[in-house]
Length: 96
Image (cartoon, rainbow, N blue to C red):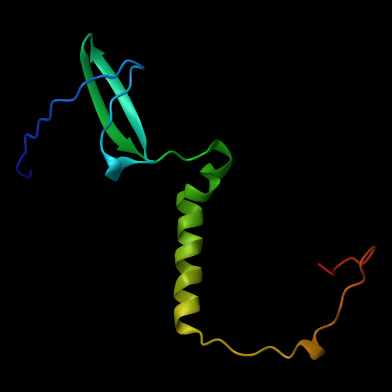
């Protein structure tokens, strides 16, 4: 385990009940834990919205890793748009 660095700073709680942690944390989300009265543990956190949890699954990570590896080894090439078939705006179904 690495060395533990003890860094303490005295802050004052303003009349509105706020504490400034510094500009380096501006806009960040934090977890505030209250293990006992008068004790707060504040940790920076990354929050994933419920509708984006699917993007953080092991299966998707595997697929994304494979796609990125393919993209790195496969050179880009120009597409000839005139050779692409245009689908009708409504009612056209693709073959399965």
